[in-house]
Length: 109
Image (cartoon, rainbow, N blue to C red; front, side, top):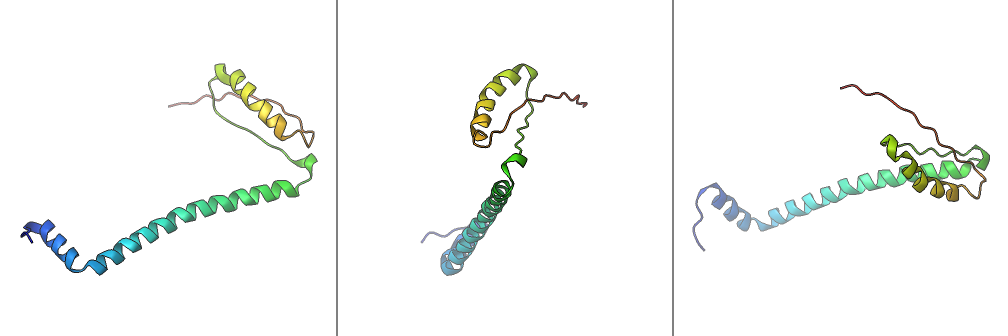
């Protein structure tokens, strides 16, 4: 085995000597990362499930759907032509109506 010098060499030699500890540290790191990612996905699934349950529990006449976005005023008609048919097909079974409301806000820097 070649002699390693410096801090990096000492770390490599110690890691090779204590490989069970290094393996356990890597497994702990992978488990923690997986748990963190799963927590985000689980929270999103719970929120989405709660929204679906609340929408299905409400009578169809009281349900409302609002789509809001920020866009260039010149692109509003194009966006409306793409979005409105999807909304109308989603609300077809309840007999809901769709309407468009536009507002303008000034922003300061």
